Length: 601
Image (cartoon, rainbow, N blue to C red; front, side, top):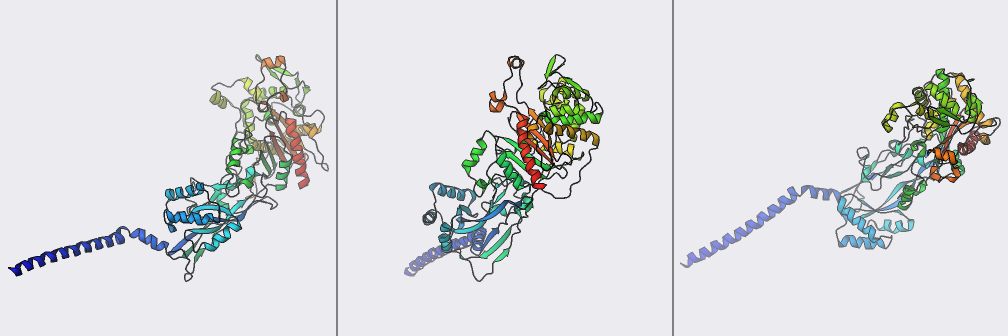
């Protein structure tokens, strides 16, 4: 009986002990399975992380030079502090790291909050920029301690530098963060680098692929504390630097224009009429590119966006203006080419013209004028009548041959095409049919026609270069070859004679702007574009002078020009927003073309 009780007790204990061992063994096997199978990817990653560290090497961005190799955009080195969240624990570990770093650099609560939020948003794999533009005094003690402080590292990177600041700011453009990663497929490795920047505007954007280069990489073996292994030879692939760009711009001319343009808002363009090389392209107000080096000054950027003169708008290619009387040479050429008028055909200007029941005014009473005299004195009546003889369709055709109403194809993003008055356009915009009175207004560059300052430069270039369809450019990629537009050379000379008279003969609308540099002179044409309609009542009681009007209601001032007059090489277009009169723009253009001639004589 006793033996049976002992056996029963022993069997129970054996069963309990065996069951316990089985449970423990099952738990152990389950844990092994979980670690080796379920969590295998995680621990493989941690193992690799403790073994190798990959650094993406950013290539130096290509530099941008002017035609004489003066630097517009360059690179300079800076020191930046980065955090590797995966090497720092949560909570207290991160707080201790912040405390240590605060002994050497300024880290505000806002900085800490930003970093903590980034860790939550993007995880712990990607490094986070803690502070850039470290001074040597800030960088040195951190660099000495980074081996003993896991989770931080110092990077010496390259930032863009714009030594000429405002000069050509709208053409050169700037680089910035691409937060939307719109070019991820092209730069997927570089996007892994915090603070990687791409071209945001101007040449920096148009030629971004050429300027960026190709990324490199550095692979190092490290231990769990982040110390680099000396027994492993780092594997390095050097980055390929971006290519340098040499522009057609002349930095001397750019800086000169910036000094002498003292109006609130406008545009200046100087171009070689034979090659299309743009020597100067300035939009005003300009902005300081040096404020876009490294981290953009947010307060400065906000002030640019809120400025009523729109400094962030490249008015040379994005500003749209009625061409005013600069359009008259185009109408004159169309009249000669179509044979509806001859150079000797004269018209009598009495200061106004009745057409139907509407009175169309001229700005003066010019008496009897020929074509050259009509250009010389800018007689509206002459061109009203010539426009009616031609008709809007032929005017529109000539405008397009001279480059209006379509983009020029210049190598900048954002160019506007403008528009040239025509039947379809009026129907589309106003829902009305074209009438002859519309043709009258269109003949002097008013009505629905809108042009960019660059288009005006192209127009004048095609008029004075012998009728070649020149197109503008900032980078010379190949020798230019332009279509011959087939204009009668005699007709071109008549137009040029009229433009010569505007500047160099008594009674011209720009005689105060003439210059003579060793026999070299300038020809041109003024334009005054109305921005408001003068009512009948105002004509009866007296038209307000431009000075009496608020700035935004004053006429735009335009001037197109060329030099030398005997063998044209340079053309210019100047637009002064609300500058009152074309003679204001003419005085600016005169200084600029004179300087250009002196530089290239």
